[in-house]
Image 1 (cartoon, rainbow, N blue to C red):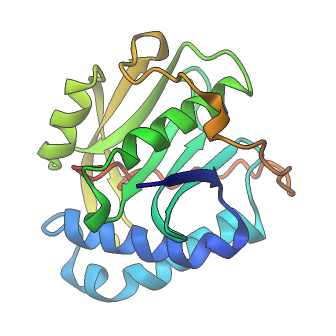
Image 2 (cartoon, one colour):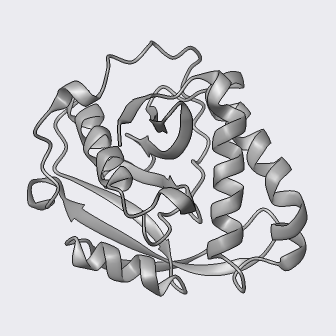
Image 3 (cartoon, rainbow, N blue to C red):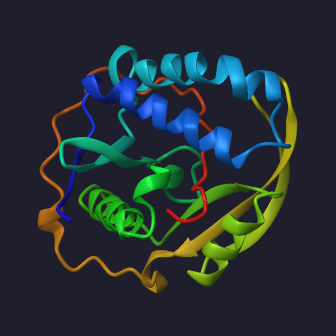
Length: 209
């Protein structure tokens, strides 16, 4: 299977939103309201990704997509300066359900690390994991991520849910980037840093990515 990883373009916004919404529907039953997951999540994710990729992209934002046979199979979103002092934020990592187990998640993470390293020297990075998402937590802990701070996030539908901050030193990450050629030079992104918080979290990687 040929996996192409490239920088996301504005034209990818709809496909990314559809994958993001589908992933949330599959992963967050019992965390978010059924009304939101079965209704508004698609439109809300569409607005979010149009904002990120077209209307007001952040300067510290990196969105990479994995394409298989010309179709979106997964995506990763990283913010370099979401919370100063913590390193880059792995904000989203999602792989299409029928494409899991094929190494697409690993390709995206490797490309994401290459993207970060091309922009600075970072000692560690972090992500937020929904506390109730036990499968994702097991995966990250197996990969060497360490759980820490617990806090409460609020979803777009008003649902409150607990999340854990996981951190990892990049030097210890088990997926080593051996070939940076998987990631082309990104196009400059227009717009200025807005200072708005990223899409914190429930975007965290679904199990099996």
